Length: 95
Image 1 (spheres, helix red, strand yellow):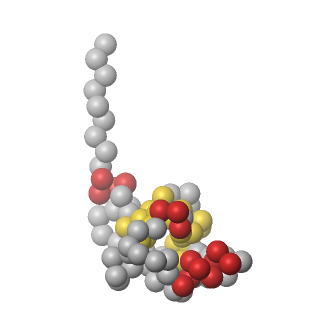
Image 2 (cartoon, helix red, strand yellow):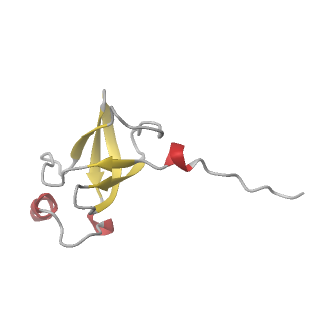
């Protein structure tokens, strides 16, 4: 029996969120509005998303929880690209 490849709907599965890496909460996570996401389904708890700032720097993050239109996303600093780590990451690593 021949197995057919399943296509992944990238629009439904790939979520990129804008983040300000200098405004992290006390747990080192970013609270990000999902109100105006287009195309992609809103992220759910446990989802992996990509965080991108206004300087085109970013990293992968895991959605810790969702409250209304806001997702609490914990950045994975080991996936950081775009230069030196932001001040929020440095503060998080010292704790």
